[in-house]
Amino acid sequence: MRERYRVIARVEKTHGRRGEVVTVPVHGLPSLMREGLKVAVVPPQLKGSRWHTVEEATDDGRAGQLVSFADVTTIDGAQGLVGRYVLASRKDLPDDFELRNVELLVGRQVSDEGLGLSGTIAEVMVGPANDVWAIDVAGEGELLLPVIDQVVGEVPEKGAIPVNAAGFYQGGAGR
Image (cartoon, rainbow, N blue to C red; front, side, top):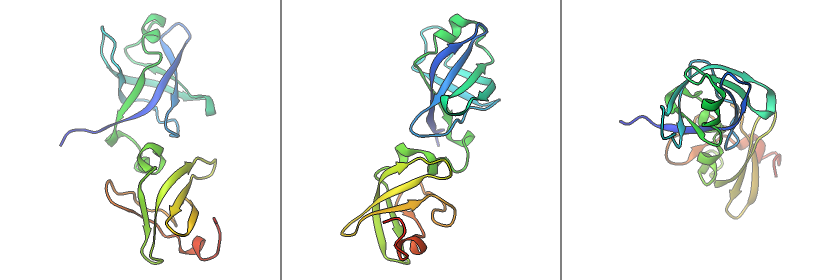
């Protein structure tokens, strides 16, 4: 099976003279750059490698991460990366990546077999404590589900995402 890659960040700007760049997460993801992560920068430059290894990554909060790549040591080398996207192998990302990737979630079906409830994720609201999925439930309107362990477990690659909405749905919370 071929290795799968995901877009995790965009190179926003250069920083300093030693080749550092500032990356910002994309698609509502948290900062995922970390030391030792092997990434591809796309579209690739005409000269040089598209593959880079993160030498150092410092998170500065909401504005992005200051990142040093092992083989980018000049401001000119860093400038060539600005505006490009950073891809990482799916196997190198956190186990709960699917729960954070808005691009993969919107439009997916969810179902709660206990309630006989099914719907489609219409929106992912990124919050400081946890995300919230806005579920379009046919004939019922919108249901807001917190993305916490008690409600959402694993996210399968295909098919409906099983949820346990009973405590939130029956009590009227989230409506």
